[in-house]
Structures are given as structure tokens and as C-alpha cells.
Image 1 (cartoon, rainbow, N blue to C red):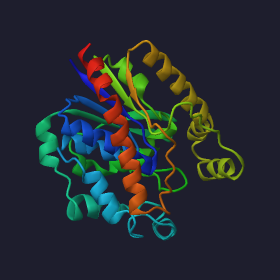
Image 2 (cartoon, one colour):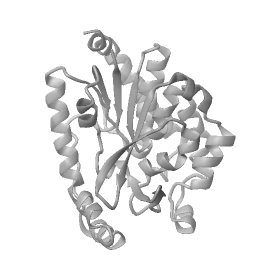
Image 3 (cartoon, rainbow, N blue to C red):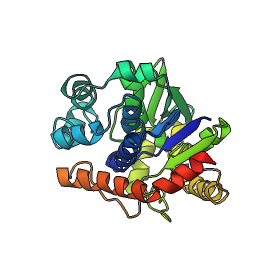
Image 4 (spheres, rainbow, N blue to C red):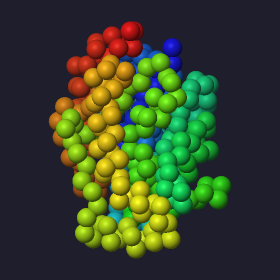
Length: 283
């Protein structure tokens, strides 16, 4: 039986997902495949490297540092999240990611990125995360707040633009069990681009009309996906873990307590639904 987890992104709301995954790691829940978007990809890799608590640890220690994420980084480098410090220095030196264990575990991991020339999502197999940091960056590169990331003559930005919650990809892949971890509470609906943000998107990416179209359609795509998830959940074809309350956390103006709070909500919610999850996995 192959178990796939689909991990939504949402910047630091992804700490909710980390709380869920760390609890499941403690319970030794087997996961065969992870399809992650944005922070879902960045944080999800730690499950297969056997590094629970790493996401919370390095975020509490480093993400409040202006060298990690800041307006000054955006102005100086074009990236709100600093490439050299947040991705490379933290990952390789300050709190090293265990790539050797990740490889030995021999699991399937996919990061979703948006190809800005085609306006389509791509599901990039991550086999050696340290060697594929650009692919992981591409999955989480927020439009307007990140430079376009070029990989093998392709251009990418945030995977959430073209496939925010890749549950359809998981269903099409015919995994035996699919578990979806959301970072927005039940009945959340995404609002479309308006005003200045729409104008900025149209201007910044004027050379990429298909990406502009995907950006404009993102809210509808997201809300339609939520409807699809609810139908699958009702039919007991998937299991859904979602926040029991709204998670508000500002990537810039946050404290260590804010990070811990979001993480703790994830742990609390999965503890409540753990028995139901096990029942679903054993059906």
C-alpha cells in the first residue's frame, strides 16, 4: 500500500504542517510519497531525512533575523527570503539538512513549481534536496517578492500559483491512500487579485501572458480544488487535516512565540484526529 501526503503551502502557516508531521513522525506513521507546494515542500523534506523538530528549531532561531527574510533583502537582492542565508547557509551550515538519510530512505518526494512560460504546474522529483535547493526555492518563490528562478532553461515561480493543493495529481497517480494537509481552516475561500496587486502582476510579468492568466485564475482554481477535496473527503477517498482555527502570521512581523503557536495548533489538531487517520489508513 502506497500512502501519499499532499502538503499545502502558505509561507509560515507551513509550521502548522510541521507540527502535524512531527507528531506523526513520533508515532512512526509510514509515508511513501510527499507532494509539497511552497513551504509544504520546504518543510516536508524533513520527514524523509528523519529530522523532526528541525523546521521549528531553525525558524525560531533564524527566521527572525533580517538576513533571513526582510524588506531590505527584497530591495538588495530581489528576494524577500534571502537566498544565500535562508536557503544555503542555514541548510548547509547552521542547521544542516541530512541528505544522506533522505537518500537512504528511498521515498518519493515532489515539489510543485509554476512554469511561468507555460502557465502550468510542474511536479519536480526531489532526490537530493541539498543539490536541488533551486528546485525547492522555485516551489516557494512568491511572485513580486522573488526573482524568477531558472533551471535547465525553464523559468519558475511559486507552485501555488498553478496548483495550490495538488490533490488531483495524487488521485491521478492512483496512490492507495491520500492524506491532504491544509493550512487554511474549513470554509476558507481565496479572493482574487484586485487593484494594485493585479496591476503589478500584469506589469512585472508582461512577457509571460500565460502566467498572468494563471495568476488571475488562481482564486477560482483554489476554491474549485477545495470543493473537489470536500467531495473526496465525503466519499472517504482521502483524509483531510486542516486548521481548527484561522492562522494569522506575518512573515516579516512575527515572533518566536508566533511560530510556536502555529506549530502547536498543528500538533493539537493531529492529536485530535490521529485515531481517525489510522482508521482511514487501515481501511
